[in-house]
Every structure is written in C-alpha cells, then in structure tokens.
Length: 187
Image (tube, rainbow, N blue to C red; front, side):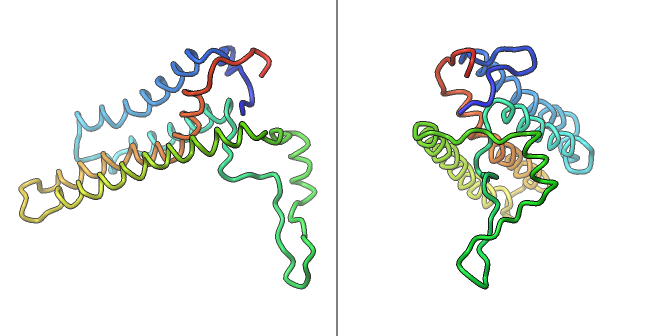
C-alpha cells in the first residue's frame, strides 16, 4: 500500500506523523485562497493566487503520492486490442521501457490493499458527491436573480468550488494516509 515510510528525512511510519502531514498540506492549500478572500474577495481568478493554489494542489498530489501510490489509473499494462485479430498489441516503446527500468513500478497490490483502496475511494468520492450536490443547491440560491447578492454570489460559488477541485485530486490518498495504522519502518 505504501511506497515508502520516509518523506524527505521524516518518518511516516507513525500514524501521527502522517496525520500532521495531511493537515499541514491542506492548511497551506486553504491558506492562500482564504487570505485572498479576505483581502480582495472579487479577484480570485484575476490574480495569480488561483494558479498558485492549483500548483500547491499538484504539489500536494506529489507529496501524498511519494508515500501512497495513486492507483486510479494503473500504468502497469498499457495495451490495446488489435482490431485485425484477437491478439493484444503492446503500446510500450523502447524509451518508455528505459524509463520503467529507471523508475520501477510499485509492486502488485495484495487483496487487503485492493480492499482498503476501494473502500477509501468509495468513501472519498461519496463525500465529494454530497459536497457537489450541496454546491448545486447553493448555486440555485446564490445565483437567483431576485436575490441581492450581485457579483458576490458568483464569488461565493467560486470559493466553494475550490475545495471540491482540491479534494477530487488528493482526498483518496489523504484518507489512506490518515486511516492506516502505524507501519513498521521497513514498509
């Protein structure tokens, strides 16, 4: 399930350290849009802060991915079915094979890892679906032309959508980091 129990020089074997890392990463990601919301509330998308926050989201995906492999899109077998016959044709190239030798793939997950991953993904995306429905209801309330919100209604919706984008990319890995028990140092 885990690639490594170390991130930089820090041990991620204890659950406490992984939880501190998850909270720290999400705090940093939430800090920038929050500061922007209080200083210049209508200029989230006109300034570079949104792009900077998106870069932070990609950094978070890298940080979580350094410990827990992202397994939504498994890159183990890039194969396609040949339309002229039943045999399978590999789409790997010599260059890709060299890269795979330099950076080997993670080992095949066992049954427990697959069960944990599927359960976490189900819980994470169910939460995202509920949050999306809540945003949908909020959109109908805030973008009602008879309400006196004006431009701020759209800004509120934009700020509500930002956590959805961040969580869609990082929540399953963060939940695995949060929920797994303490690991041995050699995991």
